[in-house]
Length: 379
Image 1: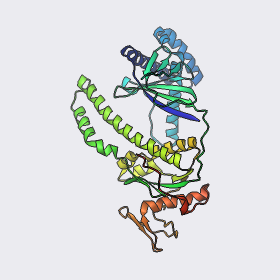
Image 2: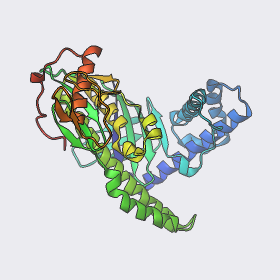
Image 3: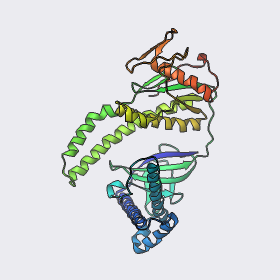
């Protein structure tokens, strides 16, 4: 199973100059390959990759960049072409690939070789990158499995990160007790499950909006190309980075809690893009990060030996879990009160209905006695 890890790098001043130089040379190779592709539309990927040798002969300084790092730019170029082709097939209006400026080129990749991790019993571990050196970083999480790829990225805030892809040989653990849960996703409550546990929506964007608005307003008043503008760009980027970190911290903790607590997890199969296009509350939907939560839940459940089943969410709020009667509710109506006598929070009823529907999609039968409150809070 492939797993992803993210670590912050702490390069020295000479190392940072080398990283920036490598980034610029990779951008040069990417743009050169794109230029050749524009001149000859029929050229194949293998032919274009072979032309990197010619480019290196014309520009000897490229010899100071690890060869596979330059070769990866050819893969990146054709990956972008496939993405454009896919968008066109789906009816999207897209133009041709553009040459990359400095502000639009932030990463380079070591694939299969050219790197090595040196764990140490000190504050900093070391990441060896061929042609660059040993860069200090903090390995806050053990890398299980063989490292396949490392992507180096410069964030707009000025920080450097390493994104590690490893083939984990670790076998999935199995949860002992057969516990199951249905999860309803919402805005007022980020999750409301069939055990009655609710977690408030992480409105990190709303909380930091004032600070972000001030920073962006100051940015708009700076002169293009000035030092003050570049400094303010970094300030805005740091605000965005903090928002993302707060949101991801919440999502990781919550998804980890469900993955290690339950054997079977039933969740809504939501069309987030469609909801954003049609909903008046699209910013809150985007901030809620449901899709990211579901992705985290799926890979963590797989690692923990749990099963995630997605069910069609249509009508889960309107359908009574007790008798199956459907009754339309307005968004402001937070209580489900059915003629059969069943009264509950509408999100709780929805979570129970989601779990009930999952029975027909692979979950074993369940009884209310099997459910109970979570052992502890997510945060």
